[in-house]
Length: 520
Picture (cartoon, rainbow, N blue to C red):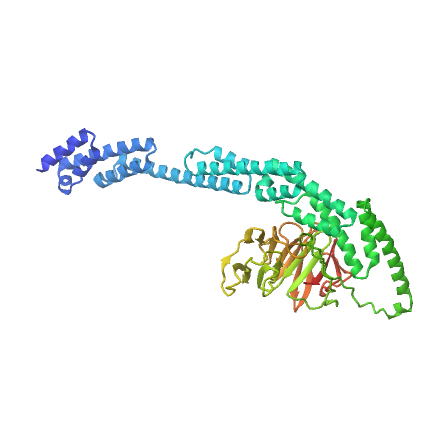
């Protein structure tokens, strides 16, 4: 019976039925026989030969299976050992290829998501995964390109009929694609030039409120443009003159307007305002030289009331401007501050670790009130240790979703914000108001202050001002606001002690940058 099974295994081997021969030759009693042992060696070498054939054709799994059968049958024969080493090398090469493939796919995905469609396509064109992830990404890329072309066509048609608002609506839909697509980028620049020109014309005509509204609409574009920034600086200079006038400093307001007069020669209202300011400056100087000036103790600090802009789309008149509540130097700061940086913009600062965001009409009133429909549900942002969490205002005790830098927060389709952590060394966060709006049209960013606030150059600052060579740090200690900087600090144009608290409502200078802090 044993000899019969040996003959059967030899026949199977001769016919090329290696799997059957391996099963027969693997019997324990057969392998104890001398002829069975010889047969097992021949079957193992045949399996190794077939495994090398599988390996040459790229069928690594089948080659590995034959190698394991040969090892179980006859141990590590030289042919079998060579096959095992070749299979291991092939598996390593395959694993490295798969890792490289995954890295290429991830790189292409990042480029496509950032709107760099041409770069993503060049990455994918070098791949041979015609039916896998590369093919799916190419389909997504083609769909994005088609959508971008459709948006570009609609935006261009809107510009041709002088409907820049419709053009902005279309470009806002494009998102990051408009930054990378050359045609969309060109249309974005044309739209920004047109609206910026209109805004400058409204400034020259004296309608500064309308200029603010126009620039607010421009902020919906995916990227800032030079034209928009130029007009924004003009408007900021107008605000600086107004703050100086509110603080009882007509001479400083006059100096700002004289600079503006050179930039806006067609603005007749500036000429008229300069005449009035010159008269006010002379009258103020005469009063200061009168006996009343003998009572000046040189300690009173002028206050700069917070600004309030008219909201054109609701046809609502701007409410009366209230003076800052704590004019004295180093006064205690509240949980809500407003920082107005000349030439940069206005920033709302919220200090509490938990804030609510919702419509102004919500009850109770949210910490960050937005111009949104009353049906929009408020949300909460919690700062817990070094993390921020988003939750519903109906369940404020819950942590909710962990926020990551760059994440969008959508209260409604027309009310969206972006959460950012600009500096990895600071847990103070930013909220960019893209389609969301506050009653104050000049505020486009909200700062969620933890320990410090960075004012300086580069994208890692909470308030970016490239005029500063090095960043300055604003922080609250013992209920007062302090500044840590290497630059000279001035208060209302006079040198100040860097260790002293920042006065609420005064003009603060850090090197070439000036700003005012008021209570929100």
